[in-house]
Image (tube, rainbow, N blue to C red):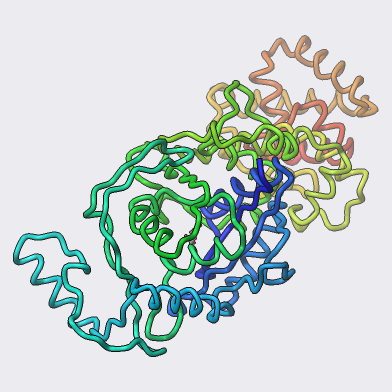
Length: 475
Ligand code: GLU
């Protein structure tokens, strides 16, 4: 394979959602797989849609997931500039080439004029094709005038690396705007020129562009530009598969996942499998493995269902595989406030206990608060427990007092606590569902906690006994 060059070409219009980061990931994986280059190009020609700060959000998001680029606006490179608004002279050069070939014309008509023409086509029940309404003028194109492509309609057959062999009739080819009156190019023109100027070998993008392929192919021919390999990625669908994922279905900013304490490696793993599969049942891949295994052949054609539960599951998986040190570093900003005065050793013990149930780090505060402060008695915890609510408060009290008596003799090592708790089961003749639930509730006041003996050992003797007393008094 020749030197592979791929690109991610976002518009600075807001945050990057799951779909945008996947649109960066697949070309990045391909470039890395073949030892080629990955280019970041900013498509900022639609200035009305531009959002301040969006460029930094693009950098920040890619940095977070670990997608790096070889060439881009911040880094430069041999084919720069990498921001479309800074490439006007390139578009002008190609536009003049088209004008000289008679393949582009000034379009002096206003938006209103065009609306009228469109309405006319509709009234005549004909599809609107701009090429049926070419203005009969011989106006020389001047900067500041819209410039329109003069198409040469024909049917096309072409190959898409994912979607296969495709074809379209001549109605899919039409005249379209190349340069707008503000002097900036449209996406339709700019991306073709830039991909050629930047020696891009594979155009990898969303399926929404596939319908325009015949128009683009016509322009490639007019420009005498060799076509790159085309790769259209499948749509990302709602979990029920019924529709494309939209903003309202939870298509949120990928940086929100960062803020909720997801791991970038899990996000990459998840996104890689959102439309690509390795052909095996393997689900967990390191980024390095993805680079090795990624191939265009295994990108699927059908829509890829976005299932956040899968991401959550994967993230939990990555968290469980962190070393104690990594876990501690990643957890740092997610502790409950009350943890501030506790030392590293204590927090590491807490982390080891909760890591199996931690799915993302923003859950950490609620899962661990009771390790740091005494939570107020929550009488509902007993009331809502089927078994415990069947016992009278005197019975519960006496169970708690018996427990206190025994735990007072424990050194609170894990081994001793385990022994003492089992002895208690025997003496009280209770099931774990009753006795251990009661002790767990009394000692944590939390709806769930890690294994009992482990938790008590970390909470410590004085605090545990104090909490059991408080609970007994409250009954
Ligand atoms: N600027 C386009 C977008 O954000 C890029 C599409 C492409 O990759 O060509 O959708």
